[in-house]
Length: 110
Image 1: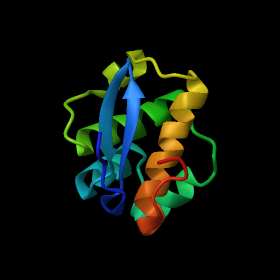
Image 2: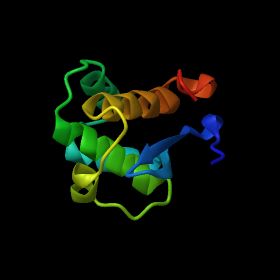
Image 3: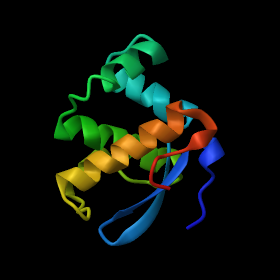
Image 4: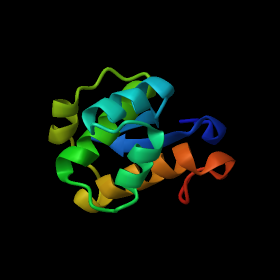
């Protein structure tokens, strides 16, 4: 699957299927609301603590999936499987946040 790192897109395999994820402006607004953050700075600050629950990761991945054009609810994300289990999900979250907030460099593992 081709992704555009300049647009903050990543590819992730969930349940054996490749998905495009992207934290679009709409997806970021969804996350601001979900995490009760007043602005993007507060959202980045929350994510930079490194203390995310499984529910937090599902919200981030769900928003990224929807931003990438996939009609997947957060509850569906909670039921998905990922290579590496929770570590794999954490890597997806890390790559997605890096692609979104680190500029053109994209994720560490494209």
